[in-house]
Image (cartoon, rainbow, N blue to C red):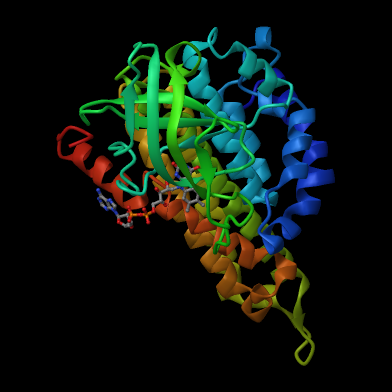
Amino acid sequence: MYRLQPDQQAALEKLQPVLDNVISVQAEDVDTQGRFPREAMAALGEAGLLGLTIPTELGGMGQTMRVAAAVVDEIAQRCASTAMVAMMHYAGVNCYLANTERFADILRAAAAGRHLSTLAFSEKGSRSQFWAPVSKAVPTADGKGVVYNAEKSWVTSAGHADGIVCSAGSDDGESVTVFAVLKDDPGLTISGGWNSLGMRGNQSNPMTMTDVELDYESRLIGEIGKGPDIMLGRALPIFQVCQGAIGVGIAESAFKAAQGHITSQGFQHTGTKLSDLPNLRASLARMRIETDKARAYVASALDKAESEAPDAMLHLLAVKESSGETAVTVTDLAMRSCGGAAFSKHLGLERAFRDARAAIVMAPTTDVLREIVGRALVNLPLFG
Ligand SMILES: Cc1cc2nc3c(=O)[nH]c(=O)nc-3n(C[C@H](O)[C@H](O)[C@H](O)COP(=O)(O)OP(=O)(O)OC[C@H]3O[C@@H](n4cnc5c(N)ncnc54)[C@H](O)[C@@H]3O)c2cc1C
């Protein structure tokens, strides 16, 4: 459905052994232990897939967000936590690409599988309203950089990511700038022990930056005071479309598990199968139709973005609402249709059911996306 060209399809072929030999094998343990999918990320790095969207001259595969969406969809069908870690990496990389020369070494390291990136936008003070950071980046006396203080509330891959793309409010609170913070920067601490309902592998722990010194020459992403260009122009589109693809991947996994169960199990006393029940067939049909609709919408949003359609941003915003909610609906249908068996770990359904719920509250949340799309539909500016 992503309509990949042969060179784009080749990137997916590199993914297949990682899916089969590592991600599928580790998924249940990652969820049960609530641990970071380190083997999967190492294998994606070895296959060159952490460099998927990095230009070939920097050692990457030079692919687009269409291929990134197809990749995370496939990963999410096996392990949504791994898909989310990969997706946040692609979003972080897309920010570094605003200053290819400045971040050339980091981009080369990512292409070689030696640098994992993530985004730290949400803050304790402004919660899911990431566009209004309360953190402070105060210019140093020599004017060459800033001293940065922030309390980031949830950072995927915390403690594992080598680079953290951070939003920072100005001293007067009037503007936002984006910086790259590195894992070993003095003043960076990680707290909490991620033990969550879903996405249990992604280690979205709080991060505190205390007087972290960042020079403009090596750490500034974009321009001073122009953070929204990076956050909305670079991070948001790939985040939204890949988050949409992850929702579709989760829904797909739930459909396949339900289909397998309903077609293989039956009632001994009547000699009939679960698939002889018309309500379960109708439920499977709904799951299939909803999943296909959501994937088609991801593909349509990609078409809009690639053709720079005037309403591309609107669709890029709506796509996360669409697939996030689809994943919740489809996993719920699958849980109901598979009865008590759905509660057991062996179908993988209860994991999909839990993982699906993260998208609703992940910023921009479903509520906020509906508000933005609604504003557009009554001719108000998208962001009020
Ligand atoms: C698994 C997971 C991983 C995450 N990883 C990252 C990450 O790597 N980086 C990162 O920056 N953040 C990350 N987040 C954080 C995420 O983006 C949100 O910031 C966070 O989930 C918001 O939680 P909260 O309790 O602060 O929500 P709150 O802001 O308290 O929201 C509570 C409710 O209020 C609603 N609400 C809030 N504002 C509005 C509004 N203006 N209009 C209508 N309704 C509104 C919300 O929709 C929600 O239903 C992650 C979250 C999850 C669950």
